[in-house]
Image (cartoon, rainbow, N blue to C red; front, side, top):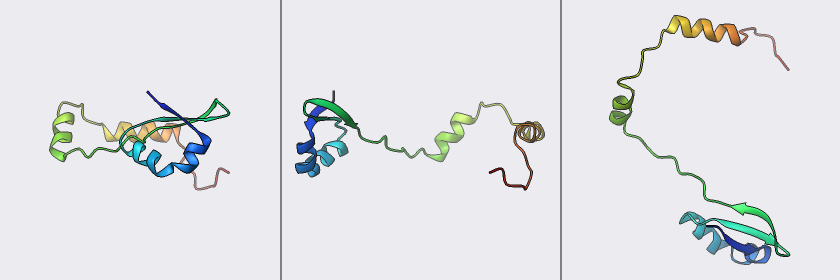
Length: 84
């Protein structure tokens, strides 16, 4: 549940708010009692061990590189001319 904070609190207590974001807390910023924005923590990228990734993809179907290349060539232009 996001905690409501005023524009003034955001300005005056930015350090505390940043620490709250670091701990996973979310905030709704209000101006004159009206919500105007939301501050939420970014999702952290998680490192996945190479062995775990290999195990996850062990049962995946193999990729036919010739077919992949022809599919890409069909939808993406390989022209050297700029498009913009």
